[in-house]
Image (cartoon, rainbow, N blue to C red):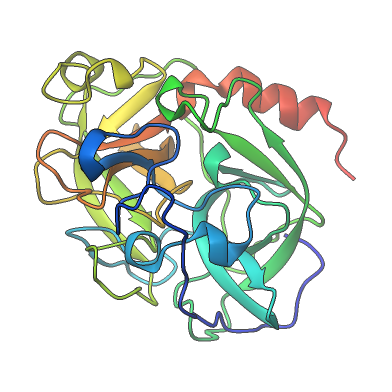
Length: 307
């Protein structure tokens, strides 16, 4: 994160989304179901649109379902992607999560991409200045060339944000560790979802970072017809599906944290789920599987000059 901003607390305001389908709270990006039934929906903001047109309060601004507040600054690589309110300059709102993967790069979901960001590092309470956080602007955004916002289930939901200045270790910020190339976790492997996402359709936004442990659902199971079927690709990782615990809107782009071989690794990037019923039984949160994109990550971050 770069050019350090003066520390300003995030100011939440009512967010609204036009309802092109006339379906009330239901809105999906790319994949619709009939008769206004629940939709496959990316778990965060829509790229390239103004904040008030992109976010719906009831479906996009709350918290992890079935979780609890994380110990402050225990997930030091977790970042908050924030954009400013055009009507209130100086105030910023959280729209997606992300992971610091080097001092100059943040990894997030492609569907989170917006024209202008700041990245909050060392963040815990979005509404309070704790003295642990600092902010850096984004210098450039690189979205996977295979990403299609109108075909979410095709995958490639990954983007890298280049920071204008180097992130630094202030005791509350750390670089996340990526898994080995091609690493696939076994079924029922426990991992943690972290984020500032939704808890229910009508729930309030949490100020503080949330966490919940969820089991990995292997591809053989997740791709069965009564789970996600053909929408679950081998380049994805599913986690949850017990009908209780799930990531949801606002958690998008954030990490799936898994402890393996004595260290925490970032195995997933929150991508999509069934909104607004994110904790639907046999519909686990679906993540971009990081170990399937290591070559792309390295090509972008190594071959793109760092200013």
